[in-house]
Each structure stands twice: as structure tokens, then as C-alpha cells.
Length: 316
Image 1: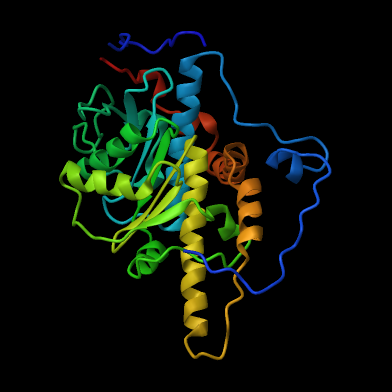
Image 2: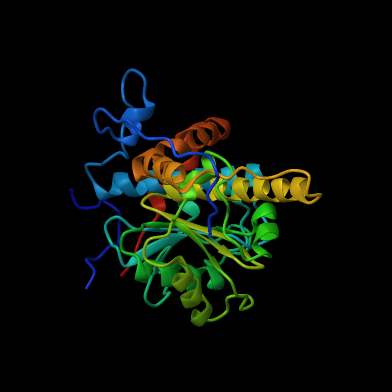
């Protein structure tokens, strides 16, 4: 990949199976998840780029679009909530949203680069209202701990959503109640403790422990939800899916409270197969594109969400 054209950058020194009989899968030829779902021409994989600058612009625009989707979905709670993306050229740097800016207003040029190891802010534009470049300290502690542990992931999403917080109080994983929830089968867990607002690195480490080395999501007791992915698109899609699955779980639990109804839970075999076909990184990227493209259209085009990118710089 060609070097970046960005200015001022120096090289860096519990699931319950159903009683239904398992269905045997007959697969004549192994296909990718996108090949399996596409009728006609196959949808493309995660795009690649000829330069770091183009890739950086893409991921920050999609980060801004994901935040605008969060705003539309009602995921905002004051100053809480954050997304981080590892820089494609400088993996020791992650981009995060500024503190005290509404999700629905963000563009690529609002994002702040900071060192994962130290938290040092190494660029960004001042908040037009406060004149400061300010990140979320709790967000830094959570996201940095995960990025240090998981070189396989490049994006982390966390917010305090209504259904996620409500289901989190039970400190239980999601059951495989629907086909969609199966995308989280065997790859989400629970942080069954509450350590208060994350004002120190120790709580971030506990959350990273709960996420583990292979999960893509974690339910934080009395706190909210967190997801990760190879792209912000993947992490963003899984976040929305987890929130909606929490809402469905709560609705089902309420419906079953009388004891007159019984849950039919998808079997382990079926859930594992569904997860294999729906949880793959290219498939998850594609799942988020309708929402990303909608936010671009509603904003007035991709260039609107890219606003300010040309002025961004990183100083290492």
C-alpha cells in the first residue's frame, strides 16, 4: 500500500438447546457467506484501497455514519458512548469521537487520534463550541485495553442503550431465540460485575478480560453493551444486532412470565451453522451498508460526512 499523504505524520518508532431434532446440513460445494446469500452477482467483500489516506478517509466517514445511525436509533445518553478505530497506517494509534459532541452531528474531521499505549492525543480539531480537543477518558481506558489485547480487531463500539442496559442487569448471555441472534452464538459473553464509571485502567482491563480473545461482544452488567470487529461496519452492525436481541429477549421473558408460554430455543447445531454463515467479517460489513448509505444520503452525500478530513493530521 502506498504511503499516506496525510500531513505532519512521522513513521512510528449460555445457551439452551431446543428439543427439536437436528437438521442435517447438505452442502454440495463450500461457499462463502456472501456467495450463499447473493442471487446473481456476488456482493463484494470489504474494500481495499491504494493508499493509507484513502483507507483512512473511508473508515472515518463510515465511523461518522455509524454514529449518525446511533443517533437515529436513540443510543445517545448525554456524553456517554464511544467508537474507536485503529489507524490503518499507524496501528499504535486509534481514532475516537470527541467528548460532548452529539452522535448525529459528527463528521470524519471531528475524530481524534490518540496513542493506544499512553492516551496522548496526537492530532484532531478543536470542538467548535468549547475550543478544546477533548476525548472521553473512560472510553480511552476501555478501548485501549481491548486494542492492546486484540490485534485481530480494528474497531470497538460501546454505548449505553435502553434494551442493552435493561437486559444487562440480569448478567446473563442472550439466548438463541431468533435466527438473527444466532450471529452472536458462542461469541459473546457477560462481564458479571460492576466496577463503577471507568475512571481508571483497571476496569478497562476487566472488561477486556470478559471479552476474551475470540468474542465479538460482551454484555456489561448494569452498564451497557460492547462489540468489536475487523471494521467499524462489522462492530457497528453487531452492536445494533445485540441491542435489538436484548429488546427481543426482554419481550420474550415478559411474555413467558405467566408460565403459559414456553420458549423454543434454536438448537446448538443450527445456531452454530447460522453464526458461521452470518458472523463472518465480510458478511457483517455488508449487513451495515444499507444503514451507512442511508446516513450518507440523509446527510447530503458522502462528502458531507467527510467534512474536515482534509485538515486532519497526526504528529507522532
